[in-house]
Length: 411
Image (cartoon, rainbow, N blue to C red; front, top):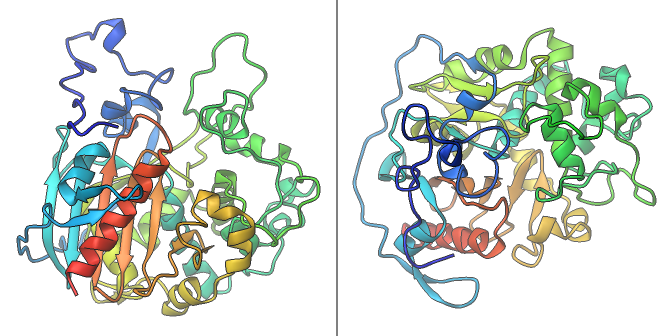
């Protein structure tokens, strides 16, 4: 990290000239790490096949705008260094930043050449969007939280998921042997991403299934782990949830999301979702959405599932997500590195629960994507970023501390 603003994609000459020279090209071989991320996260749909969830034909929800200076707010960072919100935005490779307070936009900023109409890759913020889609079918009785995943997908009978429940899938407590090490070429997440079409298939690689549909049944039980006992963050869980939704509705995931969620949001743009060669949706990380439109999703969550004059997500699901949490499983799994930061926190229904006195909760994706919701302060904060590394712990903690400082300043 540096106190100076990082170079933009244009300053790095990424994908400049026609055609761009080899050293400036962003491809499947290099897009997920390092400086190419500055360009690729606003152009993921140009690199990987995608399908769109239609916004419907209703009017766009135009939130009132009330400009408020926030960048000078000061707070202490994770190493007790004095920071401002402006410092944090610069140091964490921010592409877009939106703050909604009491239903009004009070701050909207774009960096790195991003514009309001540009969609940005959400990475694992996508997991929370997939969760709320599942909530619709739970309320209708199409899905049941206590049912085994193999009931919906017999293909998983002999995998780690065969005797795990849908709730354990949602809570990331499946005892599956899966390593989510983004920098390891032999980790499960790397093989998963290759099967999903996110990484190139170069000669000499060991066999990788040509679709996620073929990859998930291969995942086996983690020895000495018990389903439901320990928080174990695994992206495959959410993609399997997406597959279950497809199976029980006989619909493609993007069509389903558009029909049940996105057409009611008042979004300005369609949502896009990356898909693999067989059309399997990257439900765990592949959504691409504009800053303002994702702000509307955060506002819906803040308003307990109600938005644009409609109860889109059942209120009972939101309440369960926030208040029926398992702190013991969170602590036992070290909160994926956040247990010390949020000792009263939890992970439930694909959302991160802070356990703080504001009742704040959030969605997060690698390389710095966030939707942060603070009910007490009546605040939604959305941040798009293009950090060169998947996980930079002090950047994540400084970002979350900054969000908390904004929320406290608005009470």
